[in-house]
Length: 330
Image 1: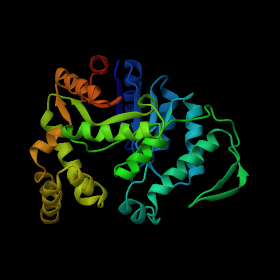
Image 2: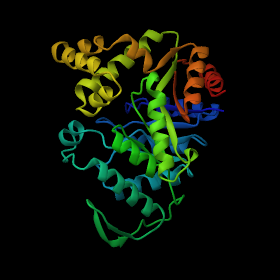
Image 3: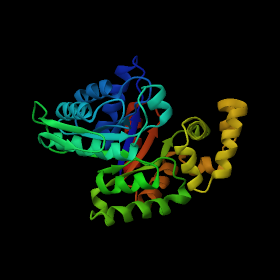
């Protein structure tokens, strides 16, 4: 049975709808649900509600950044949520980028590679109930604080969104899961081989680390809408989210396309940037269509080595949506 993963958006007004979405997925056997956090509403508020209103589905952040909250604050958040959910939390962490960190949170975007390692070490130590004596390059913590309650679990899985070769290699060595982004289908083998080689080189087995497929599937009778969304999202990240994603597409072999997207965005804004995305690249970043088409795509991702699969089901009827989830899981 495939591990399906869904994302939910929360606009602060449709709380009952989001809760019901989660319950339908929970009852249908979907493995995990992730809530994003950018510069809108925070992820933890809705996750606390979902923890209360669901029973089985794993709940996580995809992602929270490692600059706007201290590692101890994140440990408090996740330990509390893990207790509320009775052991169903996934800690999804990432660095975000300089634009968000420096111009929204007002914090210097420094030493992301070292920072994420120290965050993981501090969070893991607090979850284990250890006294906080930490001598790092960024954090010097010597007063021996502990969490003032016993966490539900001694270890809450930490999944990391990493993108540069150096950070991906570190993720393979120290995280419980990898959340990649924007890997064209034709580059799956190259990227997964490198990641799993790093996992094994660090003395771990492939089974110890989950990898969520970045190429989501969307069950819809309007596949052109899903393709338009992929096109716009990729263009935005290439043109407006600093250099990390642009350089990632260049490493994947798409520098010419990335340069065209940036130039078109500068000249024509979001519409121009999206229009400059090559059709073949848009197609390689995801799949949309009927259930059979999406099942075929999921089978290919599973065969490639991904252990978790992002799915979106547009169907509004709850019973039909649940049936589609069950068919996608296999």
